Image (tube, rainbow, N blue to C red; front, side, top):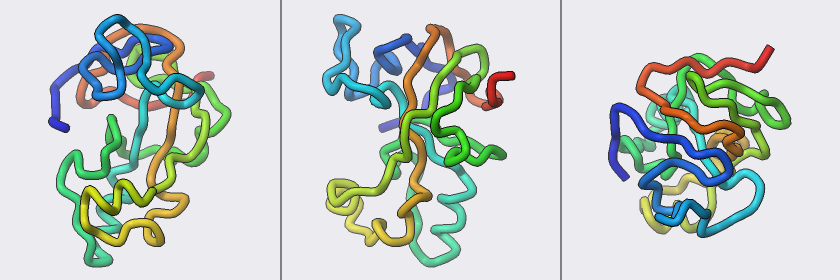
Length: 135
């Protein structure tokens, strides 16, 4: 995983170039909540204060947010810049993430590891775009 300044978000598919999206515009792992994953920067920082540091991208989430509680977005539509998304479920830590990082993440990140969401519209997401609940 690597940081980019902007990325195309494709409704019902995910982020262009994401490891889970195919070049033909379909998802490899189709189903609700598989378009994009988000994690709060505040949770990554809290984890670091407890002694477990994650490098950028090591959480394996697509987008890192700041200033919004992602758990509160389950079942809600929200904007990521000009792209409309719907929160589907919490993105809980798993043994695969532990194996990839070599870090004991399950207990400290349970109910704090982010959000799985579907993309409802297509557009570009840029660094610094606000995440806001749809009015």
